[in-house]
Length: 340
Image (tube, rainbow, N blue to C red; front, side, top):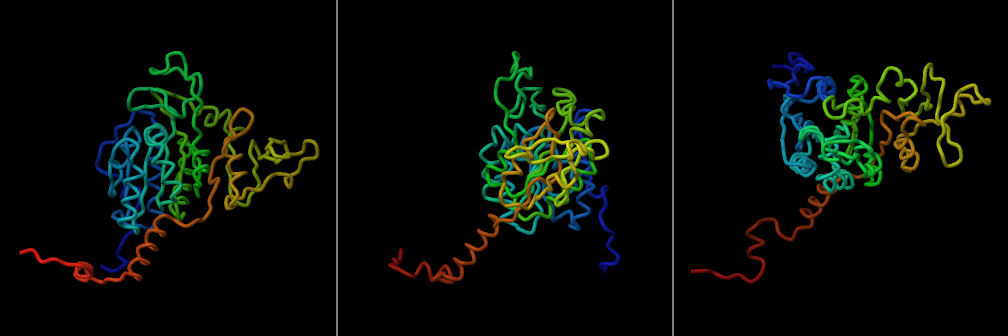
């Protein structure tokens, strides 16, 4: 068959024959659909794509993708994904985690795969709760939240995924929301093109145990004022008719209204996702309502040597400088004994 006869893949080609088993209304459905829309745009065969997951509601993802997949153990998805990528660097590897899976039992695996900059893609489904085990608080749950494991309210200070990524020298961090499948698909495609560990945090709703936890950002009433869609090289404008913007005032960010106090568009910060210095990226990632909008889109994207590249370089260097070319040469290189 010639290349002309090969039809491009579609969303339907990436949907498996398994019945999708998430609660009605769960944000995971939207994420799944966005991924199945994104993958045909990568121009890869299904056999060249692998999904790896740990334990949790999000971990069912590999079953619903018509690609290769591994459903592994709690928090250890990054380790398996690293092994897959090193064994076959040509594969597009996607690692799926919930906020509890990634940031609690899997915390060390999560930060070290970022530190090593393994060339894989991580999707972090953040609903700020343990959904599969029926509503216990997670490392991202907000103080005061009453759950089955915190009947008097959460007293822990929550992790912020962006802070962990940037603190672990992450080279790619993006944030999106489950109510915007178009933005999700665009970010998934963008992440796939990054060389190194791409980490995409998805603000996802658990309709059963933590409903509307991201409602301040996603509701129709608030989204104009509480969503800042970042694009590299463009001013940080938001609000209805882009009437608001983000300005740097000394060492702090502030929200300003265009036209007030002589503020014009040239006063607004321009987003630079490629800046090696993570200071402003961290400031943007930490913004949240009600004082600031939530930054969405690709917040940080820099290039650094990947773990895969270093492993391959080390291997080739060992081969080129090896004193022996065969196992027989090695075994006979020193003192030998004959066993009779």
